[in-house]
Amino acid sequence: MDYHILREFADSWAVIGLMAVFLGAVFWAWRPGSRKTHEDTANIPFRHEDKPASADSHSGGRPTDGATL
Image (cartoon, rainbow, N blue to C red; front, side):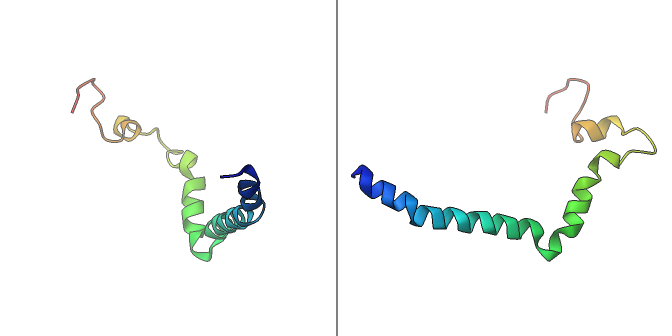
C-alpha cells in the first residue's frame, strides 16, 4: 500500500470512526440509567466509615494466612 492512500484514509474515515467511538463512550457514561452505578462507585472509599473493614473484605474472600488454593 502506498503511504498516500493510508494518509487519505486516516484523514477521512478513520477520523469519523474514532469520533463515533468517542461519542459512544460519552453517551455510555452519561446515559440515564448509569446514575446508580456512578454513585456506588463514588462511595467506595466511604463504605467502612463507621468500622474498619474485616480482613476478608481486603483479600476478596481468599485466605490471608498464606495458604494457596
